[in-house]
Length: 468
Image (cartoon, rainbow, N blue to C red; front, side, top):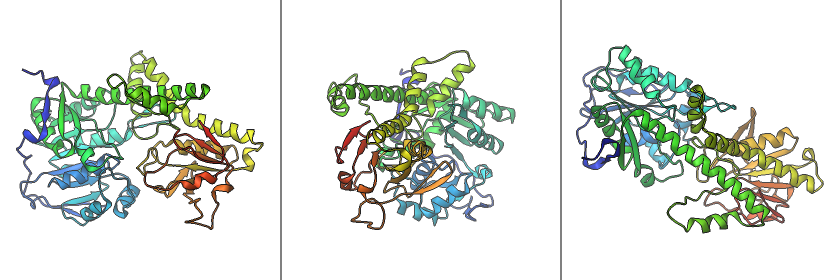
């Protein structure tokens, strides 16, 4: 028999029974939207509460509704809810038109009230993981969401936690508090941890076609969690416990952090030898087995690489242990935007200009190509550093209309005079720093920039071209 911790479960072939909807109760009125979540309507179809409408929660809510489930989507931020209603959101594999259609649907509701989880047959917790400037994890949002889920839990409910967090969090934040309420995980309430694997730039097919890891408290918990997750993945890989699944997530992000840091070091070594690091990486990738290509950049933003591994390091420090390789990798990754600002300063001084006298253009604000998400984006740190030194900084990103940098709002400009002849053109910037480019857009105007600092290592353009 295959050990349970190696079991691959094709979702489409198993677990066909639906979660039984509790019917016949009065509708719940959401305070934020006035939408009515009718318990009696749609008999036989479960009501799922998705807590946290970030880059994971919102696509999850949309996919669950597309699978025929009734959904109440919960986020504590009124601004986030307003952005969702207005279509000002980043959607992985989801068309904005699809979301607009859902907002008019009686079986998809938005609210800012965590109490709405009381109505649900299943709860999917997707609140974001955060760390402060010193790399200390922030547990407030996760603790609040789990406390609400526990407080309003009822017999027969399924609760699945997806947020990257410390090992043991499912037990400490869900299983033990439920027990204190007299609800036993595996008998009364079904609890599991399943780390998200959402790529914000992925299309619908890629987004929902991958493998998802699940660690459940009991066999019955796994069955219920697998049924809830069925619309969100192609297959499930079961591990022996929620703690094992929590460590899987930290391992994945730590692996990426270490390899990103190595890519930065290799790029620096290549520059000393006047070599192209992209060419070298592409050639190394032909080895196939044993090599996974990572490419240098201006920094690793987003929700994973620079965030998740800190949860492991923090818990190890509390036990008097350390993980030196991961810790050093995170230091290298965190220092990369500062390195970009220093290199820009160096180039400007070399041309005989002081930073307070120059205008700089930062190209690319999102943390990766193909998205509008600026979470932990290196561009924000680069702009902040240059502005602190007195430079006048503009930014351009066709998908990002506005950035907030140290409390100041900056609006994206279009430096292409073919589209906007009223503003500054490419020649008006002493230096253009290419942090990233969005696919499908024309950046030919970069050729007219006096100096280009290319942090992508792929844009051979500008009157004078420099690598990071």
